[in-house]
Image (cartoon, rainbow, N blue to C red; front, side, top):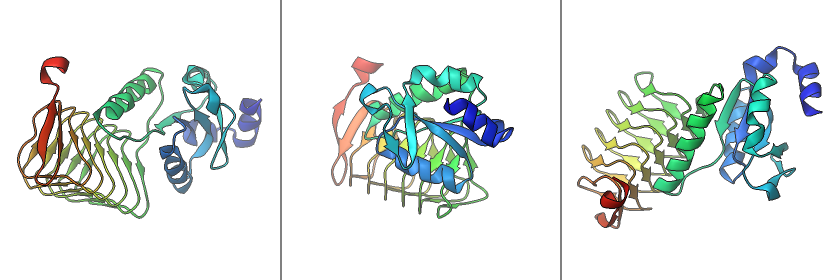
Length: 235
C-alpha cells in the first residue's frame, strides 16, 4: 500500500510536509510544481471523476475520489491544497465548497506562493492562498482565504481580495479596488482604482471596469457593462 511505503520512507515528515492535491484538472499541474518548489512531500491527488483514477499528473497518481480524504488525514497527511482553477463565479463557489470541507476534515491548507511572485512584506495574506508565477501583490493589499491569484496578475496597494476570489492571469487591479466574496476577474481584465466588484460576480476576460459592479453580476467589454444580474435568483 502507498501509505505504508510512504510512512516508512518519510517517517515523521508526513505530519510536517505530507500533502494531497484535491482536484486533478489542468490547474493541478501548476499546484504540483509550486508544492515541489516549496518542499512539500506530495502523496498524490484526488478527483471526483472516476475516469481519472490511476492517472498520472506530473509524476503523481490520482489515488481516488474525495471520499478517501478522511483516510488520508487519519493516516497522517497533514496538508491539502485545491487543484482546480476558476473560469467564473461558479468555479469560485466550488473552490469554496472544497476549502470548507478540507477544514472540517482537519487539514491544514498552506499558502502557495511561487518563487517568482513579488509579495510585499506589508501585504496581508490569508489561508490557503495561491499566488502563481510572476504575480505582484503590493503594500497594504489584503488577500483573504482561499483566493487564487494567477500568473502575472497585479494587485496594487490597498486592494481587498475577499474570500474565495479568483484573479485571472495578467489582470490588473489598480489601487484601492475591492473584490467581493466568490468573484472572478478574468484574464487580462483591468479594474480602475477604487472600483468595487460585488460578491459572486464575474468580470470577463479583457474587460475594463471603470465603475462599480453589483453583486451577482456578469460584466464584459470595454468599458465593462453588466449583461446579467442574478440578484433576485441568488439573494
